[in-house]
Length: 313
Ligand code: A2P
Image 1 (cartoon, rainbow, N blue to C red):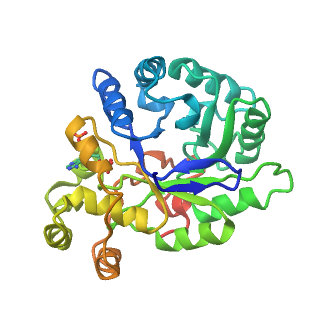
Image 2: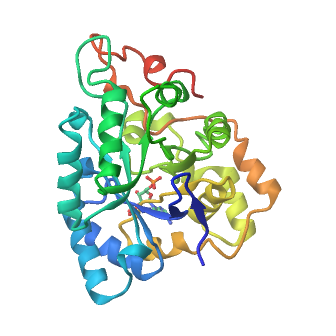
Protein backbone atom coordinates (compact mmCIF):
# COMPACT_ATOMS: atom_id res chain seq x y z
CA UNK A 1 0.00 0.00 0.00
CA UNK A 2 1.19 3.48 -0.83
CA UNK A 3 1.53 6.28 1.71
CA UNK A 4 -1.48 8.58 1.56
CA UNK A 5 -2.76 11.77 3.17
CA UNK A 6 -6.29 12.16 4.40
CA UNK A 7 -7.35 15.62 3.25
CA UNK A 8 -9.60 17.76 5.38
CA UNK A 9 -12.35 17.16 2.78
CA UNK A 10 -12.21 13.46 3.70
CA UNK A 11 -10.59 12.52 0.38
CA UNK A 12 -7.47 10.36 0.39
CA UNK A 13 -4.48 11.45 -1.71
CA UNK A 14 -1.60 9.11 -2.59
CA UNK A 15 1.53 11.05 -1.58
CA UNK A 16 3.62 10.23 -4.63
CA UNK A 17 2.29 11.68 -7.88
CA UNK A 18 3.51 12.15 -11.43
CA UNK A 19 4.21 15.74 -12.46
CA UNK A 20 3.29 16.58 -16.07
CA UNK A 21 4.57 20.16 -16.36
CA UNK A 22 7.01 20.37 -19.31
CA UNK A 23 6.03 16.91 -20.53
CA UNK A 24 5.62 17.48 -24.24
CA UNK A 25 2.65 16.28 -26.16
CA UNK A 26 4.07 13.20 -27.86
CA UNK A 27 5.70 12.13 -24.57
CA UNK A 28 3.13 12.52 -21.89
CA UNK A 29 0.85 9.70 -23.02
CA UNK A 30 3.68 7.19 -22.67
CA UNK A 31 4.68 8.77 -19.37
CA UNK A 32 1.23 8.39 -17.85
CA UNK A 33 0.92 4.81 -19.15
CA UNK A 34 4.29 3.89 -17.67
CA UNK A 35 3.54 5.62 -14.37
CA UNK A 36 0.17 4.02 -13.71
CA UNK A 37 1.44 0.62 -14.82
CA UNK A 38 4.25 0.80 -12.28
CA UNK A 39 2.01 1.89 -9.44
CA UNK A 40 1.45 5.66 -9.53
CA UNK A 41 -2.17 6.56 -8.72
CA UNK A 42 -1.83 10.35 -8.51
CA UNK A 43 -1.35 12.50 -11.63
CA UNK A 44 -0.85 16.25 -11.42
CA UNK A 45 -2.21 18.15 -14.43
CA UNK A 46 -2.95 21.72 -15.46
CA UNK A 47 -4.68 23.33 -18.40
CA UNK A 48 -1.67 25.58 -19.07
CA UNK A 49 0.62 22.57 -19.55
CA UNK A 50 -1.09 22.12 -22.92
CA UNK A 51 -1.11 18.32 -22.70
CA UNK A 52 -4.33 17.37 -20.91
CA UNK A 53 -5.86 15.77 -24.02
CA UNK A 54 -2.95 13.41 -24.23
CA UNK A 55 -3.02 12.65 -20.51
CA UNK A 56 -6.70 11.87 -21.09
CA UNK A 57 -5.88 9.48 -23.93
CA UNK A 58 -3.58 7.55 -21.60
CA UNK A 59 -6.15 7.49 -18.80
CA UNK A 60 -8.81 6.21 -21.20
CA UNK A 61 -6.50 3.41 -22.26
CA UNK A 62 -5.67 2.44 -18.67
CA UNK A 63 -9.30 2.52 -17.59
CA UNK A 64 -10.43 0.53 -20.63
CA UNK A 65 -7.77 -2.11 -19.98
CA UNK A 66 -8.79 -2.32 -16.34
CA UNK A 67 -5.28 -1.47 -15.07
CA UNK A 68 -6.98 0.84 -12.57
CA UNK A 69 -10.46 2.06 -11.79
CA UNK A 70 -11.35 5.74 -11.70
CA UNK A 71 -11.82 5.49 -7.92
CA UNK A 72 -8.22 4.34 -7.48
CA UNK A 73 -6.87 7.39 -9.30
CA UNK A 74 -6.28 10.83 -7.83
CA UNK A 75 -6.31 13.46 -10.59
CA UNK A 76 -5.52 17.13 -9.99
CA UNK A 77 -6.27 19.99 -12.38
CA UNK A 78 -5.55 23.72 -12.16
CA UNK A 79 -7.47 26.84 -13.07
CA UNK A 80 -5.47 29.14 -15.32
CA UNK A 81 -5.07 32.87 -14.64
CA UNK A 82 -7.28 33.94 -17.55
CA UNK A 83 -10.30 32.04 -16.16
CA UNK A 84 -10.66 33.56 -12.67
CA UNK A 85 -13.97 35.32 -13.41
CA UNK A 86 -17.08 33.93 -11.69
CA UNK A 87 -18.58 32.77 -14.98
CA UNK A 88 -15.30 31.43 -16.40
CA UNK A 89 -14.33 28.93 -13.70
CA UNK A 90 -16.83 26.18 -14.36
CA UNK A 91 -16.34 26.29 -18.15
CA UNK A 92 -12.58 26.03 -17.59
CA UNK A 93 -13.06 22.99 -15.38
CA UNK A 94 -15.46 21.48 -17.91
CA UNK A 95 -12.83 21.92 -20.64
CA UNK A 96 -10.25 20.15 -18.46
CA UNK A 97 -12.70 17.31 -17.77
CA UNK A 98 -13.44 17.01 -21.48
CA UNK A 99 -9.72 16.90 -22.32
CA UNK A 100 -8.95 14.40 -19.56
CA UNK A 101 -12.02 12.34 -20.46
CA UNK A 102 -13.23 12.36 -16.84
CA UNK A 103 -16.48 13.32 -15.21
CA UNK A 104 -14.90 14.65 -12.03
CA UNK A 105 -11.50 15.73 -10.68
CA UNK A 106 -10.20 14.74 -7.28
CA UNK A 107 -8.65 18.16 -6.74
CA UNK A 108 -8.95 21.49 -8.55
CA UNK A 109 -6.48 24.24 -7.64
CA UNK A 110 -6.27 27.95 -8.40
CA UNK A 111 -2.91 27.80 -10.23
CA UNK A 112 -1.64 31.29 -9.27
CA UNK A 113 -2.97 34.28 -7.31
CA UNK A 114 -2.65 36.14 -10.61
CA UNK A 115 -5.21 37.26 -13.19
CA UNK A 116 -3.29 39.46 -15.60
CA UNK A 117 -5.34 42.52 -14.62
CA UNK A 118 -3.60 45.87 -14.92
CA UNK A 119 -4.61 47.78 -11.86
CA UNK A 120 -3.42 47.83 -8.27
CA UNK A 121 -6.07 45.40 -6.97
CA UNK A 122 -6.35 41.77 -8.06
CA UNK A 123 -9.43 41.57 -10.31
CA UNK A 124 -11.38 39.32 -10.29
CA UNK A 125 -10.69 38.98 -6.58
CA UNK A 126 -9.63 35.69 -5.03
CA UNK A 127 -12.92 35.70 -3.12
CA UNK A 128 -14.92 35.83 -6.34
CA UNK A 129 -12.86 33.04 -7.89
CA UNK A 130 -13.10 30.95 -4.74
CA UNK A 131 -16.91 31.16 -4.66
CA UNK A 132 -16.93 29.76 -8.21
CA UNK A 133 -14.51 27.00 -7.13
CA UNK A 134 -16.92 26.11 -4.31
CA UNK A 135 -19.74 25.92 -6.86
CA UNK A 136 -17.67 23.34 -8.79
CA UNK A 137 -17.62 21.11 -5.69
CA UNK A 138 -21.35 21.59 -5.23
CA UNK A 139 -21.90 20.65 -8.89
CA UNK A 140 -19.93 17.42 -8.37
CA UNK A 141 -17.21 18.42 -10.86
CA UNK A 142 -14.38 18.13 -8.31
CA UNK A 143 -14.11 16.44 -4.92
CA UNK A 144 -11.75 18.93 -3.31
CA UNK A 145 -10.42 22.42 -4.01
CA UNK A 146 -7.25 24.24 -3.10
CA UNK A 147 -4.63 26.72 -4.24
CA UNK A 148 -1.12 26.77 -5.65
CA UNK A 149 1.61 29.41 -5.39
CA UNK A 150 -0.25 31.35 -2.67
CA UNK A 151 1.78 32.91 0.13
CA UNK A 152 0.74 32.45 3.72
CA UNK A 153 -0.63 36.01 3.75
CA UNK A 154 -2.75 35.51 0.64
CA UNK A 155 -4.08 32.18 1.82
CA UNK A 156 -4.81 33.55 5.29
CA UNK A 157 -6.92 36.30 3.67
CA UNK A 158 -8.93 33.62 1.90
CA UNK A 159 -9.32 31.56 5.10
CA UNK A 160 -10.46 34.67 6.98
CA UNK A 161 -13.09 35.59 4.41
CA UNK A 162 -16.59 35.60 5.95
CA UNK A 163 -17.97 34.27 2.64
CA UNK A 164 -15.85 31.10 2.81
CA UNK A 165 -18.04 27.99 2.59
CA UNK A 166 -15.53 25.28 1.65
CA UNK A 167 -11.99 25.52 2.99
CA UNK A 168 -9.05 24.96 0.67
CA UNK A 169 -7.62 21.53 1.52
CA UNK A 170 -4.32 21.61 -0.37
CA UNK A 171 -1.58 24.18 -0.90
CA UNK A 172 0.75 23.24 -3.75
CA UNK A 173 4.10 25.02 -3.66
CA UNK A 174 7.68 24.71 -4.76
CA UNK A 175 9.60 22.69 -2.17
CA UNK A 176 13.00 20.99 -2.32
CA UNK A 177 16.20 21.32 -0.27
CA UNK A 178 17.25 24.57 -2.01
CA UNK A 179 13.82 26.07 -1.29
CA UNK A 180 12.45 24.14 1.63
CA UNK A 181 9.57 26.48 2.50
CA UNK A 182 9.68 25.14 6.08
CA UNK A 183 7.84 28.04 7.71
CA UNK A 184 4.98 27.74 5.23
CA UNK A 185 4.83 23.98 5.87
CA UNK A 186 4.56 24.45 9.64
CA UNK A 187 1.89 27.09 9.25
CA UNK A 188 -0.10 24.90 6.82
CA UNK A 189 0.08 21.93 9.18
CA UNK A 190 -1.35 24.07 11.97
CA UNK A 191 -4.22 25.05 9.65
CA UNK A 192 -4.96 21.42 8.72
CA UNK A 193 -3.90 22.13 5.14
CA UNK A 194 -2.03 19.48 3.21
CA UNK A 195 1.06 20.65 1.29
CA UNK A 196 2.12 19.27 -2.09
CA UNK A 197 5.69 19.86 -3.22
CA UNK A 198 6.35 20.71 -6.85
CA UNK A 199 9.72 20.83 -8.61
CA UNK A 200 11.05 18.34 -6.02
CA UNK A 201 14.13 17.60 -8.15
CA UNK A 202 14.87 21.29 -8.58
CA UNK A 203 13.35 21.31 -12.08
CA UNK A 204 16.64 20.85 -13.95
CA UNK A 205 14.74 21.40 -17.21
CA UNK A 206 13.10 24.68 -16.24
CA UNK A 207 13.85 27.80 -18.25
CA UNK A 208 14.45 29.70 -15.02
CA UNK A 209 17.53 27.74 -14.05
CA UNK A 210 18.88 27.71 -17.58
CA UNK A 211 18.60 31.49 -17.77
CA UNK A 212 20.39 31.94 -14.48
CA UNK A 213 23.65 30.95 -16.10
CA UNK A 214 26.78 29.55 -14.59
CA UNK A 215 26.31 30.55 -10.99
CA UNK A 216 22.95 28.74 -10.67
CA UNK A 217 23.34 25.45 -8.88
CA UNK A 218 21.64 22.30 -9.99
CA UNK A 219 20.06 20.54 -7.07
CA UNK A 220 20.64 17.10 -8.59
CA UNK A 221 24.39 17.89 -8.54
CA UNK A 222 24.48 19.15 -4.95
CA UNK A 223 27.55 17.55 -3.29
CA UNK A 224 25.81 16.81 0.01
CA UNK A 225 22.99 15.10 -1.88
CA UNK A 226 25.41 13.04 -3.97
CA UNK A 227 27.19 11.92 -0.79
CA UNK A 228 23.95 10.81 0.88
CA UNK A 229 22.74 9.08 -2.27
CA UNK A 230 25.97 7.17 -2.56
CA UNK A 231 25.86 6.10 1.11
CA UNK A 232 22.25 4.90 0.76
CA UNK A 233 22.83 3.19 -2.57
CA UNK A 234 20.02 5.28 -4.08
CA UNK A 235 19.89 7.82 -6.89
CA UNK A 236 19.95 11.55 -6.03
CA UNK A 237 16.37 11.85 -7.36
CA UNK A 238 15.19 9.01 -5.11
CA UNK A 239 16.77 10.70 -2.09
CA UNK A 240 15.01 13.99 -2.91
CA UNK A 241 11.64 12.26 -3.28
CA UNK A 242 12.17 10.38 -0.02
CA UNK A 243 13.13 13.65 1.72
CA UNK A 244 9.83 15.20 0.60
CA UNK A 245 7.78 12.20 1.77
CA UNK A 246 9.47 12.22 5.17
CA UNK A 247 8.43 15.86 5.64
CA UNK A 248 4.81 14.77 5.23
CA UNK A 249 4.26 16.49 1.90
CA UNK A 250 2.95 14.86 -1.20
CA UNK A 251 5.49 15.11 -4.00
CA UNK A 252 5.26 15.39 -7.80
CA UNK A 253 8.48 14.41 -9.58
CA UNK A 254 8.09 15.01 -13.30
CA UNK A 255 9.60 12.64 -15.77
CA UNK A 256 8.82 11.71 -19.34
CA UNK A 257 11.25 8.80 -19.27
CA UNK A 258 9.77 5.39 -18.35
CA UNK A 259 12.95 4.19 -16.62
CA UNK A 260 13.17 7.32 -14.45
CA UNK A 261 9.42 7.22 -13.80
CA UNK A 262 9.83 3.71 -12.37
CA UNK A 263 12.94 4.51 -10.35
CA UNK A 264 11.31 7.67 -8.92
CA UNK A 265 8.54 5.43 -7.57
CA UNK A 266 10.97 3.01 -5.95
CA UNK A 267 11.16 4.99 -2.73
CA UNK A 268 8.54 3.36 -0.55
CA UNK A 269 10.44 0.56 1.21
CA UNK A 270 13.41 2.42 2.66
CA UNK A 271 14.04 5.60 4.65
CA UNK A 272 16.53 8.39 5.09
CA UNK A 273 18.07 8.53 8.55
CA UNK A 274 17.06 11.55 10.65
CA UNK A 275 20.63 12.83 10.20
CA UNK A 276 20.47 12.66 6.41
CA UNK A 277 16.99 14.18 6.42
CA UNK A 278 18.27 17.03 8.59
CA UNK A 279 21.41 17.53 6.49
CA UNK A 280 19.25 18.05 3.40
CA UNK A 281 16.95 20.39 5.32
CA UNK A 282 19.82 22.65 6.35
CA UNK A 283 21.81 23.21 3.17
CA UNK A 284 23.13 26.77 3.17
CA UNK A 285 22.23 27.47 -0.47
CA UNK A 286 18.76 28.84 -1.31
CA UNK A 287 17.20 29.21 -4.71
CA UNK A 288 13.69 29.27 -6.06
CA UNK A 289 13.34 27.61 -9.45
CA UNK A 290 9.98 29.23 -10.19
CA UNK A 291 10.66 32.85 -9.34
CA UNK A 292 7.30 34.39 -10.21
CA UNK A 293 9.05 37.29 -11.92
CA UNK A 294 6.79 36.75 -14.94
CA UNK A 295 3.86 38.05 -12.88
CA UNK A 296 5.40 41.39 -11.98
CA UNK A 297 3.85 44.43 -13.62
CA UNK A 298 4.43 48.09 -12.68
CA UNK A 299 0.69 48.73 -13.10
CA UNK A 300 -0.60 45.43 -11.68
CA UNK A 301 -1.14 44.24 -8.11
CA UNK A 302 2.40 42.78 -7.91
CA UNK A 303 5.13 45.31 -8.57
CA UNK A 304 7.83 43.37 -6.73
CA UNK A 305 8.50 39.78 -5.76
CA UNK A 306 7.75 40.84 -2.19
CA UNK A 307 4.21 41.80 -3.32
CA UNK A 308 3.77 38.36 -4.88
CA UNK A 309 5.30 36.11 -2.22
CA UNK A 310 4.86 38.37 0.82
CA UNK A 311 7.35 37.33 3.46
CA UNK A 312 7.53 33.64 2.60
CA UNK A 313 11.17 32.49 2.72
P1 A2P B 1 13.04 13.59 -17.76
O1 A2P B 1 11.60 14.01 -17.97
O2 A2P B 1 13.82 13.49 -19.00
O3 A2P B 1 13.16 12.37 -16.85
P2 A2P B 1 11.04 18.47 -11.35
O4 A2P B 1 10.09 17.35 -11.04
O5 A2P B 1 11.78 18.99 -10.15
O6 A2P B 1 10.38 19.58 -12.15
O7 A2P B 1 12.20 17.87 -12.29
C1 A2P B 1 11.88 17.37 -13.55
C2 A2P B 1 13.17 17.19 -14.33
O8 A2P B 1 13.98 16.20 -13.71
C3 A2P B 1 12.98 16.73 -15.75
O9 A2P B 1 13.96 17.39 -16.54
C4 A2P B 1 13.25 15.25 -15.70
O10 A2P B 1 13.76 14.79 -16.95
C5 A2P B 1 14.31 15.16 -14.64
N1 A2P B 1 14.27 13.90 -13.91
C6 A2P B 1 13.18 13.21 -13.52
N2 A2P B 1 13.52 12.10 -12.85
C7 A2P B 1 14.87 12.07 -12.81
C8 A2P B 1 15.81 11.16 -12.26
N3 A2P B 1 15.41 10.07 -11.61
N4 A2P B 1 17.13 11.46 -12.43
C9 A2P B 1 17.51 12.56 -13.10
N5 A2P B 1 16.67 13.47 -13.64
C10 A2P B 1 15.35 13.22 -13.50
